[in-house]
Length: 195
Image (cartoon, rainbow, N blue to C red; front, side, top):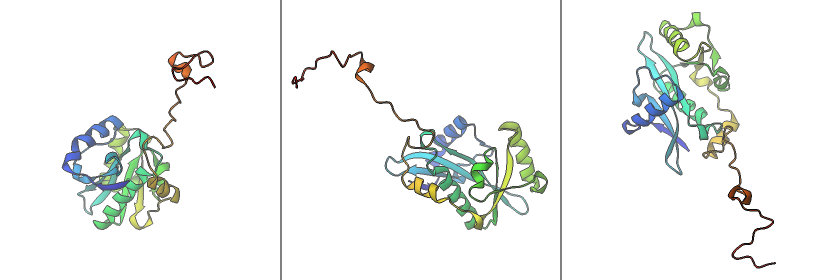
């Protein structure tokens, strides 16, 4: 499993999954995204965006973070967030913001809630937009980039990630003879040796 920058060929895939998950696609640019990829199958399994707001001074926002259902609970989202925070730091940002209705998830990485009145103007506008379009429970969070912390259990889960083994995956039921209308106590089989 690894996280890479999105490429132009990822655009249709990103738009499909952003829409399916009901995520924010305002001012969409595929080059702003990173994508988590399963190296065994080369399947794209998660994504997220670093959106730069051209204000004075510039601010950046993590947004559009999503993980495909069979891959959740395995550290995929955590590694997408880590890559976005690293990118923000490389681009010279001291902190990143996010506007989300999943605050508890992000707080485990060091994000802290920001009162609406303390937000830069553009992010206050975005917060109002997201409360109208996503959920009225959306809150603002901020993280100094050097304060990002990856919980050990998420780093380990990411190393072992595979489809369907996350917290939301249900085990596949075993097929039984009864599923095929066979009475196992009465049936004889072609290669039955009688033992």
